[in-house]
Image (cartoon, rainbow, N blue to C red; front, top):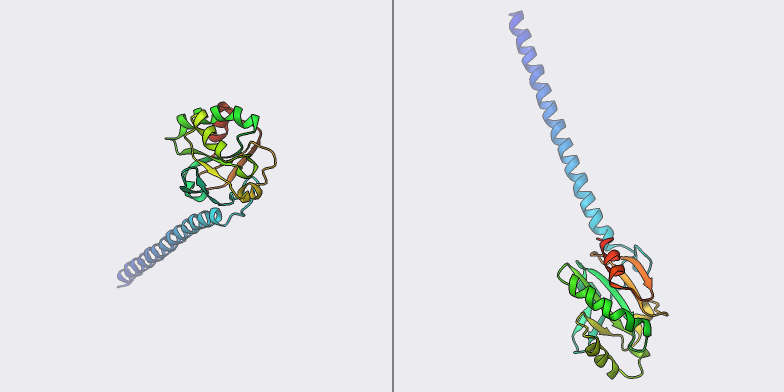
Length: 194
């Protein structure tokens, strides 16, 4: 009888150990899943809650402007793509030098989730009629919007043109370039961002 009780006692201890291990393992597994879920939520909220501003690492200020043919384009519509946000004017010699490079870059990259959004500082133009002729003469096919009230240029503090912002797929500014870029520089800059 004493042997039977020892066997029963051993079985009970083994069962208690297995039940204890099962509870520990389940709670550890739930803890890891909760931690991972929290990390994913935190990462999602972090990109949404970034400070809006013009510094590298800030979320780019959103805006909506119209194209030459009256279509509204919003910067926020481009989330998911890498963006070169370029500020320019038709009378600006460095802008004129940069545009053929931008067009060539755009043609090669437009199918790779990369785009250019060129903001014409319309309030600095002698005549807004010059913009359409400029676009046609240079054969520009990337999106061009008109800052006809000057608010977007003012928000982005574009005193010197051309000025470009490299924006990642999450809408975060990764680089600011003052002055003209060539296609090689654009390629290198966009390869360095997500």
